[in-house]
Length: 604
Image (cartoon, rainbow, N blue to C red; front, top):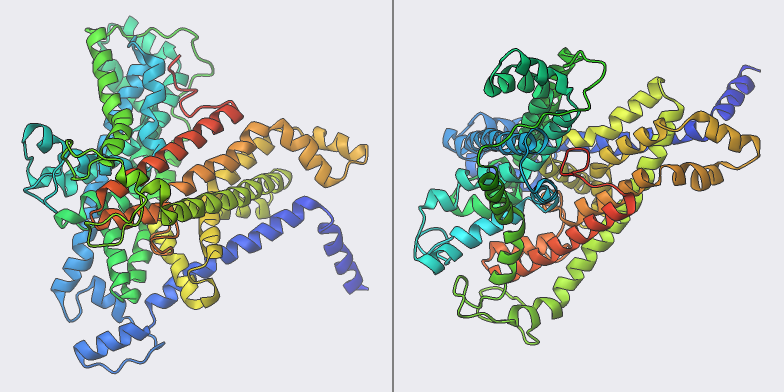
């Protein structure tokens, strides 16, 4: 009797679609997160085949494959057998990553905050143009500006000895620290994340009650005192979030340090992680992965703790409809300077890639040719196989189609999952299961991309049928890009009144009809963004896939292959293709959803 009662209760529970969705996604996500993390931890504490051979030959040990050992941790982090090895492969890259992240965060906040203030609080000209174009560096891949930096400042005196645009046109050779190392890495990452700071800070400034500043003005406070005592405290949540999120993202950045760091012997955690794995030090690479995961979780936990201590940063219940803009001295000059700077940040990169892809001899603009685009014969003159011109190169198009196919599949999986998770969480709002699902779905955001790829590399080491497969790439990208789709889907569903679906139930509409014919169309713009934005993110991704995909599988890994081998014409041309696709899809996203990334900030 009790068994039948329990069975009926379980059956009744799972007759509700929302319950099925919540339970199913909890099981799937826990499997896709808990097991991979366990695999990384297990492999970092286990002696692998190559580890046993290396340690036994170097130190006269007798370790067996698969045995438990703390040697990977003690060797990498605590200098067992060699303090110099630990310093070179862990502590020095860790310190470099921290310095780079601190500098990049400061640059992002400074640039993004200043532009946000100019747009929302001054009468600067060309607001719409500045607001729209300023977000381009964030829409484009992070390594775009790194390649531009190399194209412009590379010179015959440093690195690989190639000639950049500056030396070619003026004969000026900038010092090595300016071309490669922590300086360009920090500048490039700071500029890339400056629009992120602009979006966060600008949104708060635009919605801030203008009465607060007006009251300070009436009390005869000067402009700088108002900014310091009124404006800055109000935007403090955005400042803290920007610093911590940029710090976390920069810590695990791979592409930028590879392009403008490694040639100058500047190594960070992500580049050393790949070097350790490629050098068959897999156990130590997984130790470094765990460190990156803990740093990412720590930064966002700190963010939540700092913001959570002040539940409210304002005490007004409404806002003034009037904003008294600051009248800039030399408005015309400041506006022109802003437009010129934005040209070099957002438009010049595209011009640079096109021009560099046409130079037969890098930096020599008297050797312009279309052969790297249209050559029907294999392009010679390099130490590696290049193949035909980009537009006729089967390897390039195979990689591009591979990236497009992967992005389409991931977008379909992520968009649909976000829609369903949003439905399940909204219907079960307030329950422990819904809260747990919401938190678990957002958890992948806490893990840096490079570390996330390494985590699933560990999975493929244990589940060999996944190793090197398209399915593995789909899984890792889908889980990684799920957080924002799930949050977007949940927010969209929370806005819908329950009466809408109840009315459909009364007239006998089945669940699938209610979802596709009623709920989805009402919040169409939000859900379409949930499909298209993962597509944009996936097609430009490198850090997530660099350990999982071969050089010819995806267009970003192929670009990295050519750049590392100094075939810069091909890498610049491929980069131009990627940017064109990203901008095209982003433009399509805006048109289909009726939204733009800079709307809600200013620029009208």
